[in-house]
Amino acid sequence: MDTGNRLGDIDITDPQAMRALAHPVRLAILDHLRRHGPATATQLAPDVGATPSVTSWHLRHLAGFGLVRDAAPGTDRRQRRWEAAARGFRFEAPEDPEDVAGQAAARALTREMFARRADLPSRWVAEVEPLLSPLWQGAARLADTRIVVSAEELAAIQDGIEQVLAPYVTRGPAERPSGSRGVRLLRYALPEHAAEHHAPPGDGAEEHGTGAGTGHPGGSL
Image 1 (tube, rainbow, N blue to C red):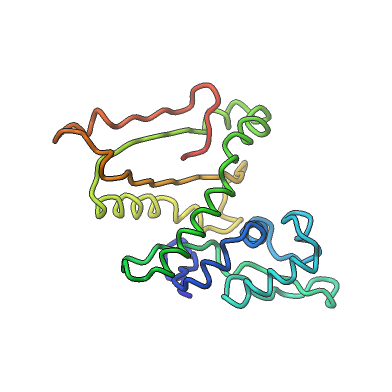
Image 2: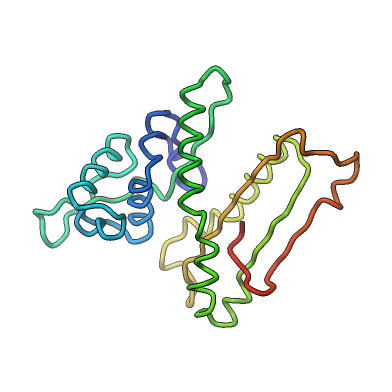
């Protein structure tokens, strides 16, 4: 699998790999390894909701698709440590309508990823936001913006966002300024059904709305 994009993500094109990843435990494993670094199956188990033996099985399955790999040994060389093979992953549904397997696999992974993040904003509001300093509360944002664009323009917007994010994603710990902390940016680009677009020509400006930082600001959605 390729990692040639600017964020250093693995590009997943194999439908079998998409289906392998469309599982809550496997997504939790990857999330933990990316956030906290190398770990053994025993260390991962409590966080991913599985026994060490089941977690080990999922790790070997992910390794078979190149999504995780062996990490350098820890202090106990008898324990196998694992690490994520890349900073993240990305995938796309195949454009070929005849590729039914690819379309179904991409849809299954999309559905599982949406389900995994479904309650994140509400949990953030309830559990994290009240504990933040006013500075960080003010820096948080919630935006729900509707735009009318072509598929090519939407791709260009996504590419522009990645260009802005790339330096912050790829820099090392030594390059981060004092006071830095992790921030979750949730980016959903959800094209509407063609029948939902009823705006007359030139009316796009009235359909564009943004809300930011009032009441309980949330992550970028």
